[in-house]
Length: 193
Length: 175
Image (tube, rainbow over all chains, first blue to last red):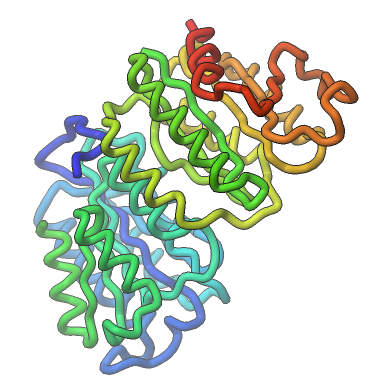
């Protein structure tokens, strides 16, 4: 599938937007994600951000979402700003709009000429907003590499079927994780790809 | 290069057949050396394809297959759709004069002040605005004009209207 956007980007530095699901379901415990999936994910993202900032010229942005999308940090290399934003995250409310979050990430990345990447961590619920396949198509067409990490048992992920299909077409890199070790590895692999 | 942006009501107001017709007509603009963008709107608005990017018929065919699956939640908010289109023009640094905004309206009522505001917002940006009414109700003659939107910017789709030719004409109006 050829991209709709074969434009050139800076091959050396990237703008990476992390998208964290902050809906109510992420406030629950699963496997070794303690005290809950959300805070464990925040911790994993914090580690990844620290590593990226100190080993590359990449910039990091941050978005959280529930039924609404809340951009927190525009792409920056200021680790303290990102860490501060991460420390504020707690589950924010009902509803889950991952499609809207991806669209917002693409909007944030629209103005950059660097290589663009969006990495989402979610438990795979979707009940509000743009259908996920529309959003992922938009990201792919706009030259944004999208990596979605879902937490839970693979066969029980609500958006698993859609993600599987889109991954086959090459629109998205989908990784399902069932423990924090896998989650950490998945985030770092997404970042390295 | 002309970069028209089609803003389409993607709620259940627009039948699947109508949606596919508009998508097909938008795709055909590629053959006329335009690079169209696409925004879908319901109660929220979403950019789907950015204008001005190189694109292929095959990619649009894949898009049609994806979009045919479901509609967006209503009620439709056309102002949000037009705002999304204008945001794209500004963010991507496109020339507004070459980026006409073509708003499709499918709700079974006369467009009101929200569409009028969308018209003025577009014109202030320097872009051309066209309103295509998919199913006029009540009869068209009762409402030739909508607020201060000039009548020549309003187009009614009839059973024999060629939407692809209409889109091409509206695209070629741009400088």
